[in-house]
Length: 475
Figure (cartoon, rainbow, N blue to C red):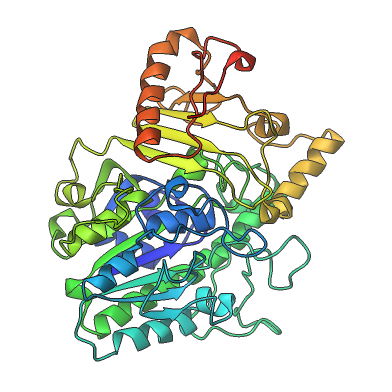
């Protein structure tokens, strides 16, 4: 039985991925019984589009979920898209979701059992781990003998308000912590972090404000970690632990600058674990294989030995089942992943197409003449407000790039991870890298063609031309 866990704006903040500050015993226990993908990626660094890819195996530009689902953005997938729960339901498999859904329309993403933000408070069904536990218990205790898929959608560690406007904190880190006015989540024993002692990721400003922001996020991650432990116990108590495949990942980068909504490494990189009872020899191992959340649906279908079929005939899965990697972590396959982004909020039109190999990332910014848009929750966050204030007053930002570099990007960006792990040197217009650029661009364009991308665009000239001379040809 597949048990899928999707976190909200979560990154590599756990011991299993080398974070020395975080206390994550339940994540680490899951990792010890999983194959850990060192290089897991989202196919789009935005909530609803990413979840649509997780549940269809189809890139957002092909399934229609171009941006956020909720009002006022109101994006939806196409009516003829066949999602994972619908496909499984057609094969007699029971499906359930507990937590954040954030995709639509409902008939495209229909589960048999649904406890989501559509019939509950999102904080309750996505952050209250006791409430979530009881819903999972309800699903698992059903006397239905059919095989099942259960999908868990955490709302943690998503931000929940702009600085100073929510007494529960910017991450709702105070929700249910037992202090006066915050309510109580019975199964959560909050973990607190000292901001001064935290190691700050390279893509976040190293300031007191950002450190406090990180500490608040880490507190919510402790809530999520303890939830993972609860849910695993429910699986065990129901007698399913020995025949259940567990997949764990997230939808997009953490809610900080250069991460969420971006397709740099800090925005694409995700935790990715697969625990298979059929492949215990892979437990506790790590793999260099590149995995995408576009691969989740093919992997689940492979578990059930179901072939994908789309009645319209216009769509085929371009993701790959990860079973070969789970069976052999040293596999030399899985060397390339793709990403596709159009919107986050409806006002944030900044389409990007990306190919990422084991050494390079090539980004095509289709709307590069416009400044890069900032998501509302990120703009209102204390870290970003502090960054703006420091920039305006001429104070050191302690950030690895300037706001001008962040807002204004060239049409093409090419980075070499071996020489430049922080992606600071754009090689797209370096003549020495012309062969690399051309090869990556051609491979990316083949994928764009294969996935029938409505934003199908081709530069008319190579990167040696100035960006003003690069022409686009729309088919």
